[in-house]
Image 1 (cartoon, rainbow over the protein chains, first blue to last red):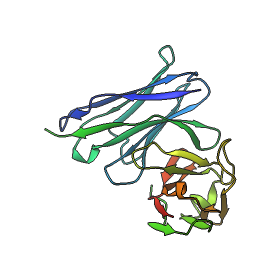
Image 2: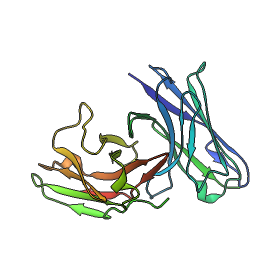
Image 3: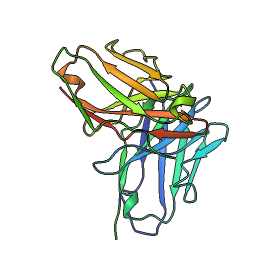
Image 4: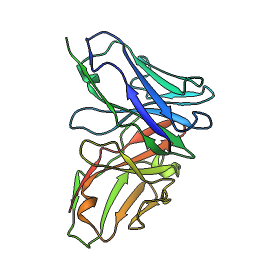
Length: 117
Length: 108
């Protein structure tokens, strides 16, 4: 059974870079798309980016200039970096596996990130 | 990228059916069949309920069904149970972009 676990700093200062890791256990990164999604407090889901294991990426146009997604197949990990963070980036960040057309069938539990000085 | 439009809330009594709409345009919902639906309980990660408009992952009760007509996708929950009370989000893979609806709170 595939499981995802997000990890990263719970607190980031404004203007700094947020770095998150999604560790995939119980399965391989190969042959799937890997997404990052976030949810600000009390609000809905926002797609950030996804990456196919072989390297193809796609980013939310509103975040594209600040986001980078990558994978390390040897470590079975997916990464996300978000630069120049502001309070608006405070959210729970989820990683998720996408199969087929669009269904994200496996999700991590999420990691809470607060941007504050 | 505009978010897809969902009603803020819907409610129903146990045993009843409710339908949640997810409205887009001919360029997004109307042009792609990669619509998925997620259930999110408070403090939990979303759970995939429907993918590719009307397909159910294994383990999801057949009380949950999906459909699409034109630029509107829908999720119907039949035979409402108390455990169905949650937030529901539609999602569309449109080319290389992913769009979420704003979410609908279902109250039983």
